[in-house]
Length: 357
Image (tube, rainbow, N blue to C red; front, side):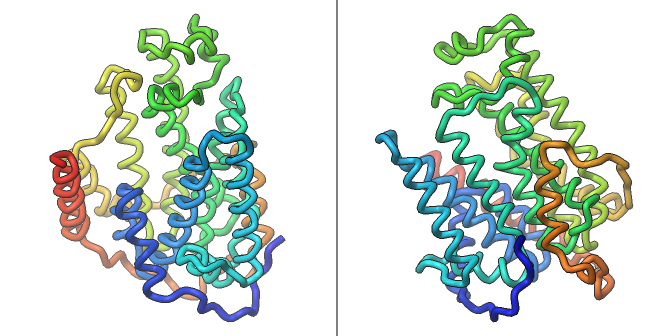
């Protein structure tokens, strides 16, 4: 169990944080946009966490198909994780930045280990027969990120971490529904196989020749409904965050949920096309998100998903009791709509520029 350390932070420089920011600007545009609605004291640590997650994901995905390549990549990532938790990060901006976050926020190592475990499941081609199996996978590759964000923001009670995990899992279910065709062409299938069989689809035969039909649409719709249930549960967790964090997390929640709505608008066909939410629609969503509804407390009396309970325990166990009582009242959000509008306009300009190359 990781406990807060007396070690002095200071591995990372401003240039290291800038390098992490550049990585996300190019590879994780939705998070990069939402991060601008976070207070500065949480924004840079969140960027450091996401940068390491992105690097880890890319390291496994780009390891190649040579025998043992992904296993070696994962072993290297575990070694990097061990070193930064020992206060000896390798010479990499993301590792130095994350090493500081680990000490400053008492970040449980189990969360990052679980993330790497999810990447390992991908590398070994693990199959997911039912929704619980999909939840198990989603808890590792996305629920961990929700738990880490809650940890950063001081929302470390069991109830709030459970809702943060709900949000992470919901986002991953949305990803799965959006990327059905792309995943299949890479030999991966994350839709519950039992659901496919119930719809009259042989999972292995379909994976060999992925096509869209009404039966597949019914499975995608069913998984989107599971995601929507978790998005609704997550609202209580967002309402329990420091006031000046709610807008950014709520923005990410609604922008991601809208991907599911876009899949539905496209007839649930995520095999022949990939759902992309147009920038005008994003702007339409963001305006009310920054209003008073973001600040309205909401409560969901629900335990953690069984599949994310270990993440909740990891955070609570690593949290000194006095950290559960905020030392200061949160201050109102200090980011206006104009900042996110400007950022999304820049993103749209960049997308247009890339499409003309």
